[in-house]
Length: 272
Image 1 (cartoon, rainbow, N blue to C red):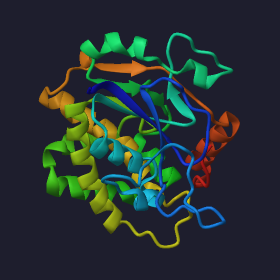
Image 2: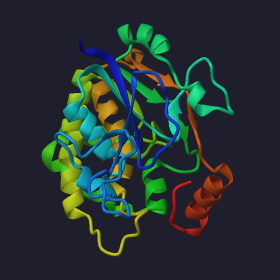
Image 3: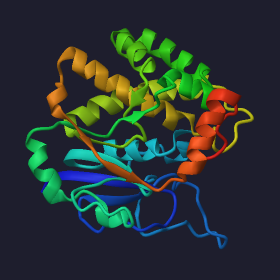
């Protein structure tokens, strides 16, 4: 039977996971990972190196190897992506228990008739645009390259691209739940751009943290894709649902590095 909804939980390590059937723990970057005794690392989760996959590109694509796997290998009317330390939450939100707070099937089911796209509540940057924030924390040339690719391959997206990069808010973290046909549309568009950006962006001398540039580019391209779908009338604002989320982050560190990047030109060096 075709599932109504299936949400992968992207993780690179063993972690507490929701028990509900709609959540599928997925080991991202599973390809080539071995224990000291030479046996493959196995958390007991689904693996992104099964079926059609790009697991071996995880060092540059991050959780997007999980999105690609879900696109190609899952069969569900709605497909979603969350992370082992970031989840959409429902009415039973408990600030001390993120896993117990995750949104349930019973909460999502009534919404499926009305909404086609589910996104995390907007992250607002206030003193930064999406482009300047990326340029201060990583390398703005990445998005110059991406713009060239869009101009060549899908110029109808340029207006949305420029508009989104000037915004001071975004639907971040690559968290989403999309109707199947929209997931197909998004991923076909996204990965065409990412594979070209992967080839063109200089990967020499990058730290493990900075190497995950395709995953970070995707966070903003998701907003570009949504903006274009709104422009062309494929979806309406009333068919997009913002959901609350919880995340396990070090806020003192996050605020410190955000301000350091903005005012002291210090790039991010690690996840928060």
